[in-house]
Amino acid sequence: MSKTRSLLLDFETDEVGRLARKSAKEKKALIKAFSDASDVVRERALIASIDLTSPEIVTDIAKALTDDVQDVRIAAAQALAFYRQPRTVPILLGGLKDESTWVRSHCAVGLSKLLNGPIWARLSSEDIDKFVEDFPEMADEDINNFLSLIKMKGPAISNFMNWRSKGFDIDIDMTILVKELEGTPILLSEETTAEAPKTAGVSDEVEEILRELPEEILTTLPPEDIRRLTPTSARELVDQLKESIPTTVLPKKKKKKKKKVVKVRKVKKVVKKKKATAKDKLIKKLPAEVRRDIGEETLGSLSVEELEALLATSPEAEEPEVEPEPETKPADPRMQGFVEKYGDEKAELLITIPEVMLEGIPEEQIVEMDLETLKGLTQALEPRE
Image (cartoon, rainbow, N blue to C red; front, side, top):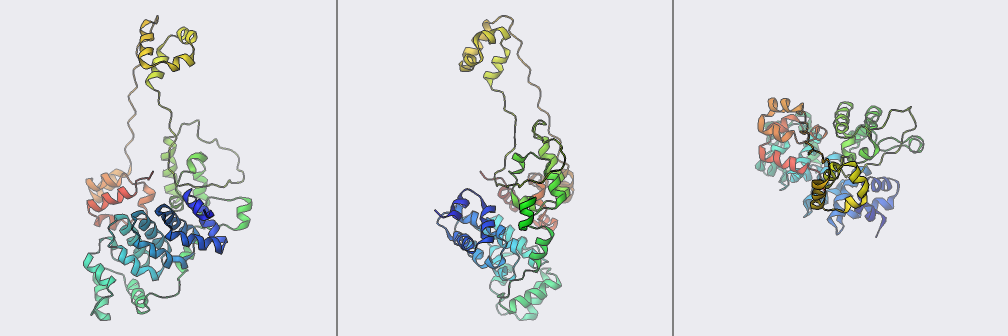
C-alpha cells in the first residue's frame, strides 16, 4: 500500500497535502487517488487537494464531480469552490443539477465567488440548461440581456462573456487565491515551522483565543472550519465549548511560551463526565461499614438485584437520593434574529447549524431557500461517524 493511500485511510488529509506540496511524486500520487477503487480514499484525496493549494489541478478535481458516490462529489464540489478558477465555470453550472443538495450548494458558492449576482442555488432548471448548452441560437446581445434579467452584476457579465469567448480555457487566475492566502496564510515558511509553528490559516488573535481550549478538544476541530474563524466567531465557539468542559480540564493561564504545533483531525467529540450507573448509586447508599467489610471489588461484582437485597438488610439504610433536576440550557441568542429574518420554521432549522458554518452562506440565499432545501442542508452539515 502506498504511503499516500495509507495516510488517506487514516484521515491524515492535512499531512497528505503537506507532502504533495513538497514532492512532485507525492502530488502525482494524490491526483491518482482521485480515481482510487475505494470511495473513502477518493473522498479524502479530494479534501486533501485543498491543503495542496495548487490551482492547476482543478481539471483533475472536476472529473470527480461525475462520481457515482455522493460523498465523493460533495468533496469535489467543495474543492472546486475553494479554488475559484474560471475554467471550472461550466463544471460548476452542471453541478447545479446534481441530485445532492450539498453538491448543489457548494457549486452555487463557487459560482458566487466567480460571478457575483444571481442566487445560483435558486436558478431554475431551464435557466441552468441555457448555460450548460451554451445559449443555443442566442446572439451576444440576447445573452447579455438574459444575464441582466437573472441579476448578474455588470463586471460579472463582462467576465463571463470574455471567458466564454475563450471557451473558458484560459490561464489559471491566481490573483484571488493569492490574495486570500496572504490574508490567512495556509503555507508556513520553513523558519516559522522550525521555531514557533502556529495553527495553519488563522490570525494571531484567533489562535490566541483557541489556545484557551484543552489540546484534546482543539485537535478535534476540523481544519476547514478553523480557517474560516474570525476573532468574534472564535470567541463565541470557545465560550460555547468551555461551557461543556469541566473546569478541572481547562488549561491554566501561564506565561507565554513558544507555541506548539496543533494537529487538526476531522473527528468531533466533547469531553463529558462519566454518568453514574444504577449499581454505583446502590453501592453509595450502603452504610460505610458495610462497604468497608465487603470491599469495593466484591461490591462491584454484585448484580443490581443482589445489591438491592443487601441494602434492604443493611442497618441504617440511607433514604433514596433525589436526583437534581437537570439545568435548562439557555436559549441560543441567535434564535430571535433568525425568527425576525426568516420566520419560525426556518429559524428552527438554522439554529441547529454551527454559526461558523453559516458565515459562508449569504442571507439572501437563505431567504430564497424553501424548507426542503434547507432541511437537506442541515442534514448535510450533521457530523459524520
